Amino acid sequence: MRSVSIILIIVSTIILSSCASGYKYMQPEKIVYSNKLTEDGLQFSYFYNVLSETDNDDYSKKEIKSPIKVLAVKIKNETGRKLDIGEDVLFLKNGQPVETVSPKQVESQIKQGTLGYLFYLLLTPMNLTISREDNTDTYPIGLAVGPGIAFGNMIYASSANSTFKKNLTTENILTRQVGDGETVYGLLCILGSSMDPITIKLK
Image (tube, rainbow, N blue to C red; front, side, top):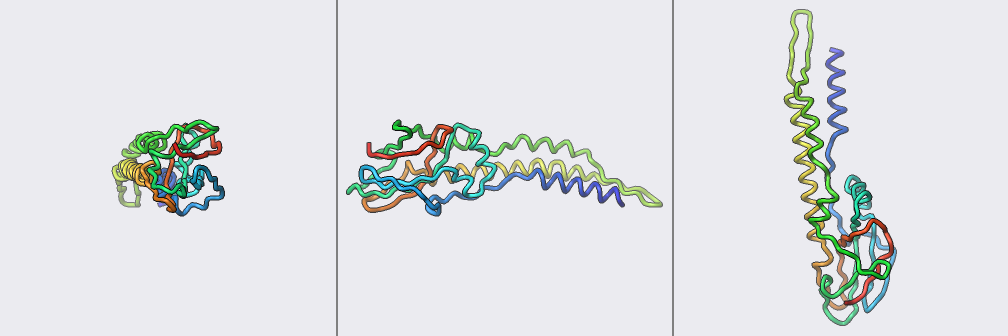
């Protein structure tokens, strides 16, 4: 029975160490913004590292290695007119317009990989053998463990990636409109690996 315990420990360790990560929704309105800039009747605050702040550690690590940054932003409109953020507002870094990135592009760069989990199909031939005094029983546990870990994690990671993309799309600040005196929150995805200060102005 000792061999059974060892095998179960090994299998449990593999399962626990190979899990895909879920995804936690980024909610820009719940971020604590420590900075505030005022320009052209716009009050602007932003927050880098929003993926890390919302405990999406796997996505945050991939963001660090990518040429893309995801920011939470807050804009209060005091211009005296209604604004379409994507059409009327310009975001700047070092005095130059930032290059924005679509949710689809971001998701393709900062997503959980899925093909790597196919490695666990190598566990498929694994058998559990239990020897007793009068007989020996063999159970093909690999048929459940191998495909279970592989495809279960692939499905879970794909679902998390889809939720990530949906979050980026629904919270895209460039699709928002804001009336005079109103405040709008959203996510801004930009090209560039540095976390230099961001400014804002009317086009």
